[in-house]
Image (cartoon, rainbow, N blue to C red; front, side):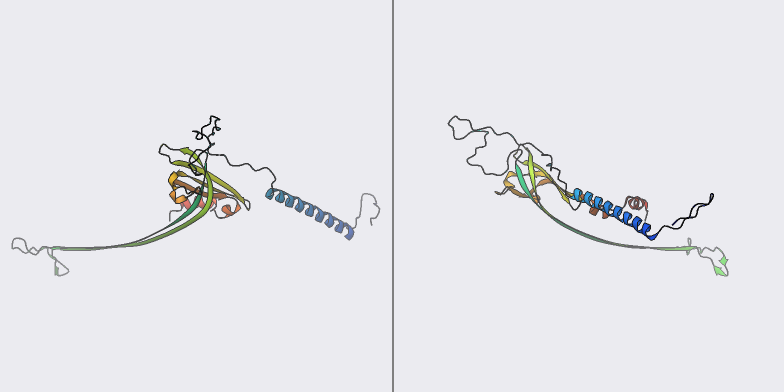
Length: 253
């Protein structure tokens, strides 16, 4: 209820409880709408329906010529083989790498150093003559000297490290060396809980080490490079902040 204005003076009463309640209701509806939009955005991010694209292929397979209709059973350079198995032996073939890396190292050191030195010298006579250099406080002064030194150092140290990595990865033969060894390379990317995980393997293998199931252990790869890394909120939480790393690099103790 408002009173009519008299001159330039106006008197207004506070808003009623119904107006305040309507305002709170509107604010609540706006807040719920905003929360719904954020939930939809999060749902869309976790359930992206875009088509998946494979990782780049390290090497394209060699083309195989078709079987020429000349009546011959064996044809060189074709995909027909009567005696060889299905193990990888050409560029573009696939090999399953069984990653089984287990490493453990320990080192203990103990160092102890003790040194002591003693030196003394005195002149009692010189060609039968007893030297006299006076006296100090009634005590004859003798030309003698003595010195002792001792040093001691001790140090201990110990370190222990253990790593375990187990995975399976399909790799591609990217090159065949002159002696028949296969240069392999492969990678895998996994999106898990908002973070990407990467596994990469590269190295050189002998065809004789490849099993009839076309698999090989990671311990049988020469010049092997096995990488496991990732990014995301979990990896960011476990990483030291950049400012702390900066001050730690300057801390002299």
